[in-house]
Image 1 (cartoon, rainbow, N blue to C red):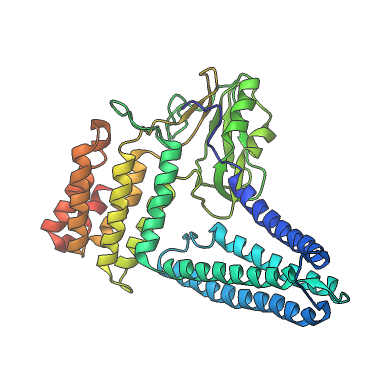
Image 2: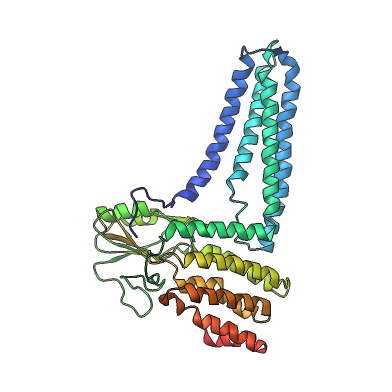
Amino acid sequence: MRLPRRPPDRAPLQARRRLRSGVVQLLCAAGGVVAGLALPSSGVGPFVDGGRLTEPLVTLGVGVVGVVSIVYSLLFGVVQWSAGTFSPRLALFRDDPMVWRTFAFAIGVFVYCTVAAVAGADQHRVSVLVPGAAILGVLVAVGLIRRLQLRAFASIQLAYVLKAIGAQGRRVIDHLYPPRSGAVTGAPSRDAPAGRPHGEGTPGPTPADHAVVWTGRSGVVQQLDLPRLVVAASQADAVVSMTVAVGDTVHEGAPLATVDGSGPPDDVVRRAVVRGTERSFDQDPLLAFRLLADIALRALSPAVNDPASAVDALDATDGLLRHLITRDLDVAEVRDDRGVVRVRLVVPTWEDVVRTGVADLLPVAAASPMVLRRMVRLLDHLLGVAPPAARDALVPIRDDVRSELAEPSRRGAGWTRRH
């Protein structure tokens, strides 16, 4: 994979997201201060008595804050219910930019109303724009809150959640994998990256290499700042081979990467890793399949016993797999502008995706014929369109599913024995 001149990689995106939420709130508050000071002294008529506006403005400002507090309390319950019903790793609504943008706008309205009330309290002639702007701001805030409520209520509906996960999965697939042209070569193995095997039973780093260990707190690798890493490796004329994948948990003292020769400083490699408390969609194509599998597994649990929802989750998984099969998964090697390999990544293989999205469901789905039939249709279609290199991972799973349909009393014994 050659890194474009304008790299689409959004490795620092998660950190910027937190920064953006704080900056937007600060800008809205600052805008409220400026507008609250400027409009009372405006010469645009008609005019009203400023002293009589103080109480209505304060009431509007406090009312907006009160409504926002109530709504966000309800939304907290919605998020908790969604996580308990679908998956604790599901954070689609919580990470929606609309949540903190609505909060920021409400802060701006509150600040404007308060500042305008104080600034116009001792003025006999205040432009009608002052109450007009306050009323308009409150109406816009109510509209945003209403939209936020509708989105929150939609987030507890299975169809909406599956559609949102599928959209996020397609976005990251399109972002990471180029369209397939001709025959597809399998993605490099997680245990043996192409050109630099480090798995069990394979040669380790040469004496000229040195290992970079993680020195920070334990956490999940959410993203990699590939542009920074490629530039640093190119300047040092070295190759950085990552030993952890996006979505893996890295612990203090654990190997992070192997640098070929006198490469970039270890701190540069560590700073290229964005660590967080949970997985993020930004560069993790396996997360969407993990969430869909979580939903199906929860639906098939004895406590829920809802195989129809598991079939719906398999429908969404089928759509993602059909989209993924059209992409080139061999993206482990990242090249600089000269075409020289500078970074080797640990990326999910086709086997990883199929195991996570389909095979992990088989032991639980063995007692549900309708789910097994849907899995057979999914696998049969993929076998019809998959390149030869990808079929080897599908045939054993399809055979096991058919065996379960033919002998339901075995309840996953074939899968357990084979794997």
